[in-house]
Length: 463
Image (cartoon, rainbow, N blue to C red; front, side):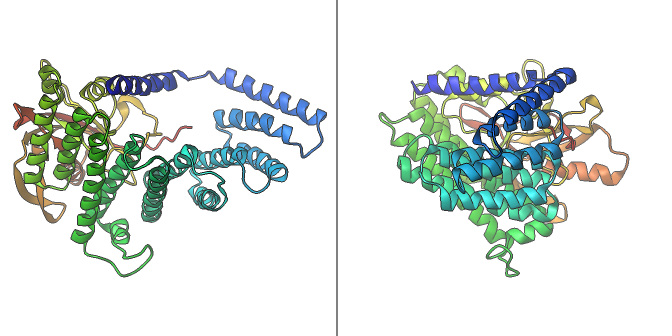
């Protein structure tokens, strides 16, 4: 039953992406929808007295039509009017106002008005904490979505606000997790995506920490905003231990299922191995991968499917936690832009990697990307590279001597936009930060190689 649910979940995710892509409505149709929405609002205004709660729905429709037309400033005013009417009728904070407040924040983000968006996000978070009447799945999802908006802010807001977004995102995610555990218990499967979201956040913070600069320094603060900072290695160790604990909690959820989900336990070990790779812990990675591989065999997973799971390198971290081999392979088959799999046999293909944003490069987006592609004219670089299994080694990267596991070696720049040696060096540094789950044969990590097409971020926000 678990396998069927995982299959349906991934299929739904893939189909939803196709559906979203298909929603390219012609301009004339959008303009007609806006005209119709305004006509309905005008009719509602003629038949009611202002302010009247019955105006909220037609106001929402007008706001949505304006957003579709990229008329964000006008949409902002319409949403404000709807919120004020709802507040007069309902009081300070209700379910209806929550939806309007969220849409108002999203509309500000579409405009790139992050100063205003942060203020509204802070206010809405305060309302969630102090005015929510029920602790339920909806409130958990509200906190998670606010956390995701802050993660978007890391990539889209100005660099000086990155640490603020990091701290807020982690705090909101922990609130969501604590509420979920209090509501559902410690071993409910619904906790897994919440935990894995935190794992990805700590990896992203580790990348920022290693990049250094203002954000890396602020992440080392003993408390946010403090000038007293911890050593970089100590903060990195904290992230490593937190991520390891969260992944082991995911493993415990599968262990405490009735009956125990041995396939899920084994895949949790694989993800724990991935986490060790990201933090250059070679011996621990080998042990976890070995446990995961043998665990899948013990769970009676078809050997052909196990071999297929491990036949190609995978870019880390995985975007989602998949508790079955079938779900993981289905997701992998659907990957296109920014995919995490390198297909080597029978026809080698380039691994496709899309950078998150120009303000936070060297990493794929931890949340759904909102950048439009400009096509083949986008800046990109094509590399050849090799992987040496799980062998550890050290080298100079961007002025520091680093221990590394499963990073790209023997890099050769085959083609790129770069017009200078400095740009080429910057490109090499970007690729040197990527980590991979290596290929495995009979449970042993293998050396391999291939090509990587690294696409730089394009700053084209879309609603």
